[in-house]
Image (cartoon, rainbow over all chains, first blue to last red; front, side):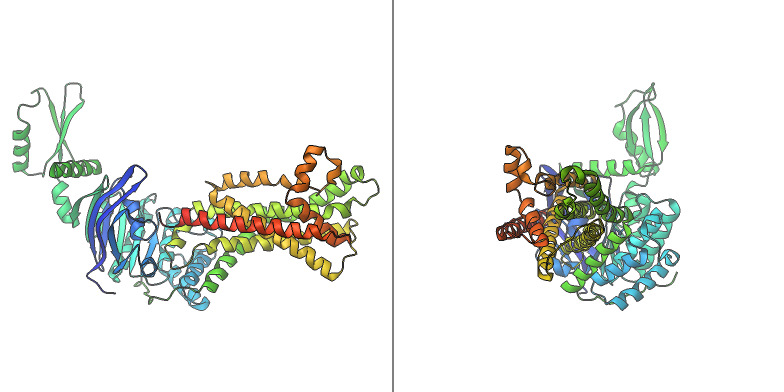
Amino acid sequence: MATAFAIEVSGIRKSFGKQVVLKNINLNVPTGKVFALLGPNGAGKTTLINILSTLVIPDSGSVLVAGYDVVTNKERVKQSISLTGQSVAVDEMLTATENLQMMGRLSGLSASESRIRATELLKYFDLAEAAHKRMKTFSGGMRRRLDLAISLVVGRSILFLDEPTTGLDTRSRQALWNIVLKLAASGITIFLTTQYLEEADQLADEIAVIANGHIVAQGSAEELKSRIGGEVIELRNENDQIIREFPTDGSMEGLKRVLDQYNGSFSDDARVSIRRPTMDDVFLDLTTEKQEVSS
Amino acid sequence: MTNFPITTETKAATLGATNAVFIGRSLRHSLRNTEALVMAIALPIMLMLLFTYVFGGAIDPGGDYVTYVVPGIILLCAGYGSSITAVDVAADMTNGIIERFRTMPIKSIHVITGHVVASLARNLLATGVVIGVALLVGFRSNASFWEWLGAIGIIVLFILTFTWLYAAIGLVASSPAVASSYGFALLFVPYLSSAFVPTETMPNWIQGVAENQPITPVIEAIRGLLTGNLDNSNVWWALGWCLVILLGSYVWCTWTFLRKAGSR
């Protein structure tokens, strides 16, 4: 189904017991694009991806995936999606080929179609040499690649990737990024979660930042970077303890604004230094801003 | 790297294909889990030899103990073999693969069916080994073909009952290690029955437990069928107990699976 948005989320809330995990999430993912949900651990990324992939039912709100409701039309949604979860979901006791063939059969392919497809995918994911080795012997990067290959056994139009590169070394991460970009070029809609700004930047057409169950910012990588890309000014006291940190946009104008704003609030003995923003600053900046907007 | 090979969307797998895949998967697991497979075959041999040559002389100096003990060892081994199911099921539920199955357009509960069928196959193999070794060490049966068939039928029902029970335990357990220790506890139940010694030899209060627990009629029914002095009431009690526990375990399994692996 070719709707403008592959995923439409409106007003999603979810709690587990007393813990509120998602508070009124709204977002639209354009068909054929790569969408990254960026946020720290515990922000609600996995819960949201689990709702989108029918594993978890939201308390309220509605989600359309490929035009179908994830609660009332779950079976149709499952036929349009494929999930690569956070923990690698391969069968340790089986070989790479057997894993792929099993998922092929479960996805409705015949035995011979599954065989052909397995060979195709192993070649594409650079796993042909390990085709008949058991998963137990695979490295982390190989497992992740096979995990992703399994998700692509049949052509689903929407692919969910929950923290696809967490725990991988730089080289494996780069290899996985290349694959995701290739998949994106083939027209699949990709929804991924990540805690790395760089990953969202490299892969995504559009990024939503999630913190404490809220979407605190949404836009292209460029748009977000311009909001959070400036240096951070640190003020320290005579004992070299940080009194205050504030982000700037990197311009002279911005620096003046900061100085005006804090003029006189701190002692003149305070030491000033400047550093590049970290991911923590990004989240801190965005979550603080959100609270200001909502208050 | 070449362009990604796109396929067209397919229709969902049939129920038959889903079950065939899960059964095939579990059978492969059983064959490849070498330690468990070796134990499943070695345990019956060891127990058979232990009870015949070590305990047998003291229990029945006449040397007929082997004939008495065969049904007990069959059930003891079936109990052990079925307990592996708890570990397999717990592993599937905790290592992430169930999430993938659940997002596919299939009935993911059939992953349990796969483990049950594999357990039945493993345990029938173990039963075959017990009977083979028993014949070698002097077990003789005058049972007819139909009596053998009846005995095997009860053994199959017993294996299925215990396997579904262990599958439910595997679903409830928080990890494979926990599942394994729950399973261990249940393995003592056959000792408190007429499996190894007649219940009359036990103290009164234990007799009450031993005579009225499910294993005893199952043992007595199999023993009666194989040695030719069958008391029909034992068969009915055996069938009744097994069917009740089987049904209960199946319902427990389905309910737990839906609660744990259904949508939350």
